Image (cartoon, rainbow, N blue to C red):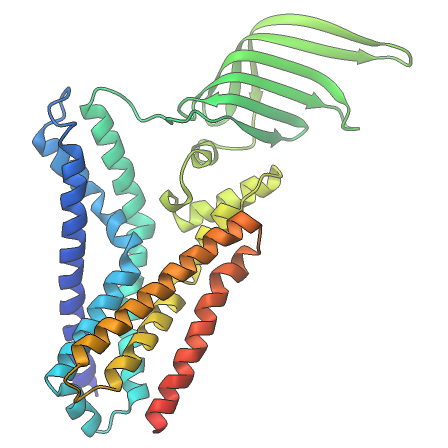
Length: 360
């Protein structure tokens, strides 16, 4: 059985790497074509475009890993079936369920490697590619939308109208509350600098409220600088402007807690985190669903067509899962349920049919 395990792993690895090379190569080609218009500007050369596209490849591999592993494993199994090797393997005493278990185990090893790639290498390589391109074009990476945000820091509510680069803010208002949650002071500055620990407002207007039983006295003071220590860090601010897919799972987890502490919606980040957590289970469901077509056609002349049909059905299932994630954001469904329900239903159906086919 160890020889069989090694042979299966070798075959599936070969086809998975082949699919990855072709798949990623096509993406790299189209990404390079998109960079042609930029080549020649400032110091952005042909080599710069190649480096930029290459540095982004780990993120491409990670985002399409499920499809790549699915196609690789199915093509590998299809090759074994077309050359009657699966018939020989079954003749040696291996049942359909045992073969499926071996394939799933190998696929999970593949996805474990891909997860390490996506969690530790892809975020750094993507950041490097963006910085490299910006430097070559003579600029710096900044948020194009410059969207503002609200945060809570102890008894102080912070409003930023424009976030230029997660370090320089525009139109900053601090609303300070007393221990009874009553308005105590308000500060405003056109510009503020954030160094990761302190928020420093420049040319600040400081409105201090002094309340008596009958009157509220408002005093205005102009301060050249006003600095306050904050509980959030640079990573939390940068994450506000990033797409959830650009964050590692640990960053997603931290950011969800950060948003919850500030009473901000975190559903998009929760959906992304749950999708990653259930990704191995989704891959298993897709593989088992597709393998049903292979095991039922070991001597069938239309094996290729049935493998293709299995792949199409599995990809349609993944598309449905993604649509479910979007629906959960649109209609405010529970993120964990919307992400896991389609996968668990298909997995249960695939396991039932696989055991039924094995028993038959």
